[in-house]
Image (cartoon, rainbow, N blue to C red):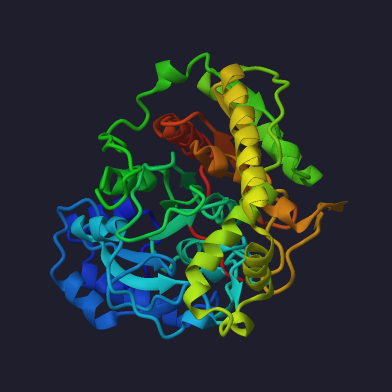
Length: 463
């Protein structure tokens, strides 16, 4: 009997199931034991009876056969709570299962737990009135980031090997960087939304929080592909895991720009140093060609926030204004700003700002094939305090938290966060690599090279 959950990656857990070294039921029992003992507050619901039945009948020949899967609170599973991290929705139950979640279950994944998120996924700190603070297993006083903070914290802590995530402004990459995990934000449309989900300002994409590159590749093998409920979803692409490591010739000589303070972000000096060192190493290891670029990408945070406020109002409109006092301050102000200030003029300005970012990114990728930068402006900040306005001693607006990640959400291109080391106080730091649309598999190969030559700890030593 396994007393603790698997500390390797999900792919090796499936191999252990197939070899008879563990059973899915044993693994799930260990997972629940670890959840019950956890101090990270990363899990907000479990459906143990249903999950145990699924584990007992798991087909381990399937890609994720028997693997306990954590589902982010913003993703829907029929019959599970649909609280969206908000007191205003505390009694809601999901009536449908999202396409991406159904595909994971069809691939053998056992839907084991629901993980915390920031309210409506609106900020990169997982702290809500409903659940309180979710904590980073590398330092329990720090945040795992957000909005996929519960999934990231649970995977990094060792509760489960995989968790779902979503990235609308960095919400996979940011917690990936803070928690020492792989975090791939895919091209818009790669994994479908739906059924019945609003597409909003066309920035949020589904994905996962994982410990390894091959886990992420297998995830995309299972989850990607067109679905009629999402008319903007892309055709299926095969071979994500099978083709890992096969793009060496394609990568050789590719132009790469290194911009630690991408899109005008304010970044801590220590983070810059770690990013520069890792980028130089990866450029040499992959045979890339470093180039300097002059194109500037405008800051997109204001446009992203304003248009996102309209999406927030769409979510709460039927309960507004009765729910106003239930919302966290930032979410309430976002809704109020949308109601009072997002008129036709604001919509036009927002669209013009989107065009400026898109043109800046297009010009950037005309001059280079990859951009290497920091994932986060600094290491993980406090779990239950205000969003920081200082980064390594440098003052900046709190929206600086997402300045490095938001442009790829607006433009829709893929970007990945890869662990590259630790700060002086032992907190993970991530290297973010950006690529043009539809180049996820090249990003995975670059991440694989880092993983093979500079491996990272798969599980944090919880303090």
